Image (tube, helix red, strand yellow):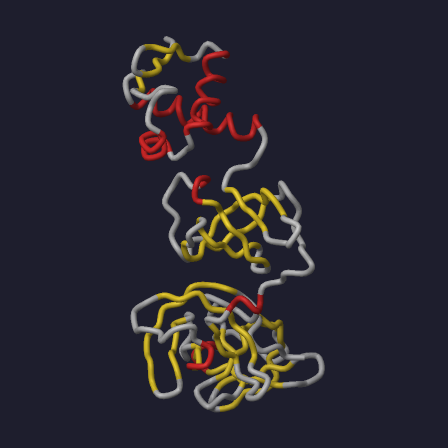
Length: 278
């Protein structure tokens, strides 16, 4: 079966003036336009292609990789708005449509929006939606506390930053646990901090546990000391905002880190800061 919105491994079947028709094991066909047909391709050669709808809503294959595939969340840029909706650039020749009914607010050309790609049951077309919440899995939680996960950074809220976890669940990084700039659309690793009784998920950017938190931050402090001639004008009485701005860590983490360095006799504490032991 040829799957719309995904990469398919198919076989070259026949050549036409428009391109190469590819087939699956059940002899279903899809056209790979001439511009994407490899010069050395022969009949029955295997090729991996992405299948989507062309401008006339017919399935068509491409060797290009889209920015998002079926059932994926991500940020895409609006390139056109017309009478039927907004068209977003997803890296293919034909932009992906987000109909007006699937917009939370009127989309504006040039701006990026969080969308989810799905197949419209009525038209069998790939479309996008900005009403993403209904596509999060909230019943069967597939992660556990302490697990490393893939994060997609989303919008700010009053509590912190919303994220998509493993392209499946919604999560939150609380404001007081954010110590570096986060940009919507950014992808990074994170860790599951808490799964609450209502299945809401709290996320952190650093692995939990004393050793896992202290060691990398101790290293960061040592690096800053070396860059500043062995002295860092920060201590346990410094303003938390200043520590966060200069080191991208909380004051609590900073205090634990310098405590660990002090016990290892790598630094000494002085008035107004810490000094590297020579």
